[in-house]
Amino acid sequence: MGNFKLGFKKVYFPARSHGINKYLRRFLFVLALFFSIIFTLVLAIYFPVRGISKDFQTVKTSAQAVYTAGKNQDLQDLETRIGILKKDLVTLESSVVRLNWLSLIPYIGSYQSDSLHLVKAAYFSLEAMEESVNTITPYADLLGLKGQSKFVSGSADERIKTAVETIDKIVPNIDKIAEKLQSAQKELDYPDFNRYPEKLGNQKVRERLLQGKDLFNSTATLFVNARPLLKKLPQILGNQESQRYLILFQNDAELRATGGFMTAFAIFQIDKGKITVERSDDIYKLDEAKKRQFPAPEKILTYHKDVKNYQLRDSNLSPDFVNSMGEFERLLSEADVDLGNYQGIIAFDTQVLVSTVNILGEFIIAGRQFSSETDKRCDCPKVIFQMFITSANEKHILFYFKDPSAQQGIESLNFAGRIKEFDGDYLHINNVNFAGAKSNLFVENFVKQEINVENGDLVKTLTLTYKNPAPASNCNLEAGQLCLNGILRNWIRIYVPKGSTLIDFAGSEKPSLVYDELGKTVFEGFITVKPQGSSEVKVKYRLPTQVNNKKPYSILIQKQPGTDNDEFEFKFNKFQDKFILETDKIISLT
Image 1 (cartoon, helix red, strand yellow):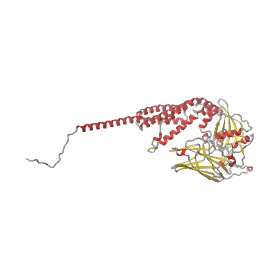
Image 2: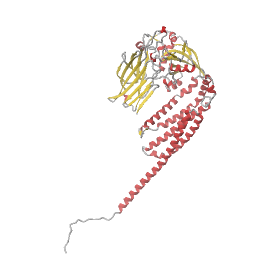
Image 3: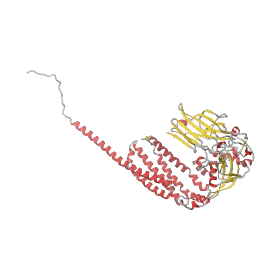
Image 4: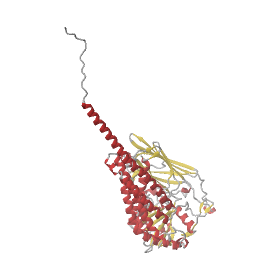
């Protein structure tokens, strides 16, 4: 029988391989192990996180109770609430520690570490508060912080004496409080909030964290730096030995560089907080007592009206109060007047004086009656010193102490009228009224600053507007009129970051000048403002490289002493802000 071949190719069916089952089993084992690990991790994270969330809410409630007790000045309740909050923070820390193993995991670990540092920072801050409360509590009754007391019902002199003696007893604990705050700052320095998301839902995250950190650091630094002053307070207030201070009264209705025209002076003696006036007189008496005359500086010859000699009353030319007082004392040394040794100079403007009059009543200095009663002729107090102020933070009162430690402390509080250094953009506008009557009573100031980017550089345009809506005064003094509102002769200096380049200065009635002073670049000009009129200057300049390259952008705007209700407007890209410059202000843009 012959061979019969079909037209099919041979097909081979290999036998089932045991290797497939082997690899499948391995794959399933790895998959099961992976899900087991994930499940274990979820359980290991879920329960601690749930505990942290619960503990955090407890801490939040306790913290609110502490705030309420502090607001109510209930020291006994505050002490109790602090103890509860401390225990709650310890519990929260224990819950956070349970997740310490997460620190080994990249990226995630950094957030876990941050949370632990934040809890520790809160604990140290609370200890600082506890130390403060423990320090004050023994004197709570004396200070009137707990019900009616002898302090509240006693005379003004008795209360002042008690307060000064109490401060002396509190001083030794200042270092302990500062150490706790510094420990909190160190813990707060660890987290880098810039890597946090900008928002979670509708809630801003990064901005609030950064603002909170800045607020705490600035407050803690302020207290730590002010320690030298706080320790010197009993001495300054004459608790052990009476102290003497030269008081200068600055009339901000005639605005000068440090707050106003120096119109009168006094010597105050402070003994255990009680103030007595040793002597007082018109500032002109000091000028009349000078042994010789000095030629007026160039700026006075250029901008002042018919003034050829350099007088004590015109010596506060520098916007830096310490520098101006150095010039004042240099001229004072030439006066045939013995003021004796004094421990410092304190300058008051009209705001502070009216406040004092309202509290203590009318008094007389240099033969003048000081009253807060309104004069219908000008709708202002009889003495032009007006506009009540309660805080030296608004620069209506400036301090200069001879003691270096006290001066260091007062500068840290920003109560010394210094032109400050700042790592970023900077602006200080200084206006000086040279022979413009008391027209600053009526002139309204508006400042608009707009920043644009040109060829990669930040270019700023400043528009300064001065408006005087009031009619001119009748200067017929014989008719009993008040010559207050006349033509304002205004010397303008604009302090900006050193190295800034002027592009244009429009509106000045005299040639504009550019120079460096006090670590800043200065743009200088001059205008006049008529009653029921207005004037405007526009200054355009390029910020220096060190400001252009600094990220994020920030600016310090320093207020001129003696000013009030100056309106500022700030624009940079989409950011806009309008505000009354009541204190020095920092604007930071992320």
